[in-house]
Image 1 (cartoon, rainbow, N blue to C red):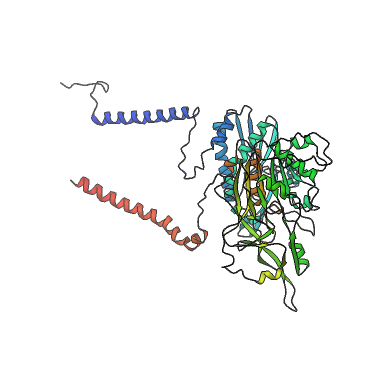
Image 2 (spheres, rainbow, N blue to C red):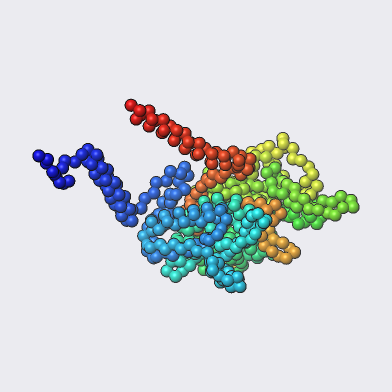
Amino acid sequence: MVDFKTKAERPKTNSERLKKKNWLKILGFLAVLVLINVIAQYFYTRIDFTKEKRYTLNSKTKEILAKTEKDITITVFLDGEIPSAFKRLRNATKDLLNDYKAYSNAKVKIIFQDPLDGVAANEQDTLIKSLGEIGIKPIAINIKNDAGLTQKIIFPMALIDIDGKPMAINLLQKTGGPATDYETNINSSIQNLEYSFTAAIKRLQKGQNPKIGFLDGHNKALETQFYDAVNNTLSQNFYAGFVDLQIIKKQGLDDLDVLFITKPQTALSELEKYKINYFVMKGGRLVWSIDQVIASLDSLQKRPEIMATNNQLNIDDMLFEYGARINYNLITDVNSAAIPVATNNPGEQAQIDLAPWIYYPILTPDTSNALVKNIDGVKAEFASTVDIIDVPNIKKTIILQTSPYNKVFETPKMLSLQMLAQEPKQEEYTSMPKTAGILLEGRFKSVFLNRPVPAGIDEDYNLPAISKPTKMIVIGDGDIFANQYSKADNSIFPLGLDRYTQQNYGNKALLLNIADYFTDDDNLIALRNKEIKVRLLNKALIKAEKLKWQLINTAFPFILLICFATFQHYYRKHKYAK
């Protein structure tokens, strides 16, 4: 008799049990994945394995985002068909903003768009003009292709809007170089992204920008020489302008946060010194950028020789009381910038050559100090050394120095362009680095303590004997923050850019760092100093070994596949032959 059992009644074989178990494992794995994704919608985390922690937000940023109450809309205009270098900047921006969205207490809306996408060619100029009115400015870049160079307009900009208050952000930090040199700027721009966005959000939350003034009335070319510093570099995040101490009132000084004494060419009056001293006593931050010696390249190019003489500015007593002294000398340094020199042979047309000029030293920032960390060498012109005076209750920090290959000349001194033909002797130019810039922090003694009030002071300033805690910088060069300009057409060149060599120096970064350090109580300058190392490929090596790596990437996987198939064949043959 045959016992017929149904499928449900028949005992399950081992293979069926194994098959069911596998299905349960798969379903369990899928259930875990779904559960993880559901949880991930409410909790955010990221594991950063990079050495420099490039994907980790600074604690200051997290703190500011946690305090955010109003919704934030961030529009990034760097999108569409763009070169690979700018794609890297865009992707870094996208990653960073996703972190902002995760850590913000308020809702963060992120938009990426190409403003010229779909816009007719005859309407693009109107659109670019309207965007420029809100601070969104394009750049033209040259792209190499098989046909040569083609020009493309892109917008490396972003716009942050909080409660109807917009602020433009420049994602590309150095735009002063030639159009084909943009790739060298991307790395420093990526390093600066977190600072740019966090500082903008903080200022929008605060509702006002700090006020920065440049001393007026002592330099006829002031507005031209410092146009980029005031109207471009600082105006994006600060209220910046020129201040005449002869007419400014006490309330005007009270409203000012930072005062720059830059390249005065005539002596300051006692009235102006009194107001400067009051500004320090109330806790205002002061920057001295002083030419202690009168010398200029323009004069040298007009005459065979000039005498570099001392500049009597009537400020030595103030600086001494505050803890610094700018010496009456000139720094020369083997590590120097080049200047244009006209050369010609008899019967030939004159041509312009570039030659290193030892009176234009490249000052080295002290990388241990957050104020100047990670900035490039700073170009100076006819600079002087700065001494630290032992004043109590003042912290003194060196921020700018020469290289170890320098020599200092006392003034007056005769200068001539014939010096360009003389090679500096190594034994004469081997020395200890000389100080050219210092940072002073603390409570300063009043310069006008027990002194009469100068004539012309018609308000009660009520000067204390000791200032509130404040900061001061003293630099022995008046051209540190000055831009180059063309006298032919009055065109202005970006601060830090050498128009002749197309070299970008760290002068603009220094100015921004000082402005941030002097106006930010939260010390966001630490974000500006965030260092991200981009490990770029060696283009020369790629070109030399191109065929080798093409063969490796095409032939090696195929050979590996054949080897695996051969091994599998003989393994199965050996296994089942038994």
